[in-house]
Length: 61
Image (tube, rainbow, N blue to C red; front, side, top):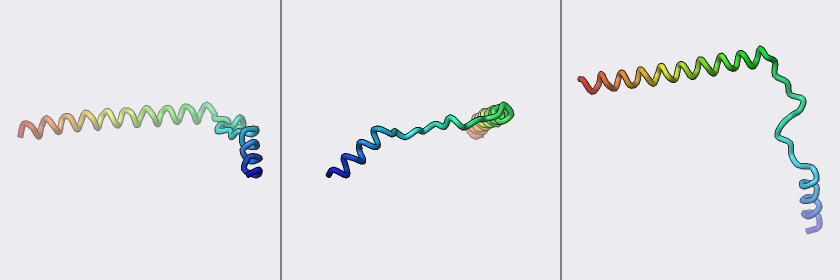
């Protein structure tokens, strides 16, 4: 039981850090990721429009 309490105290003293202060992302990487996100968003919107058009065509037939 004492061992459990000691471990519990250690966890409270040294909480886990989910973020790293050492991580750096270059502007090029940020710009590239933004371009990929924009392309993916446009692709999804185009696909959504195609699905709506196909649904209208199927209703007409």
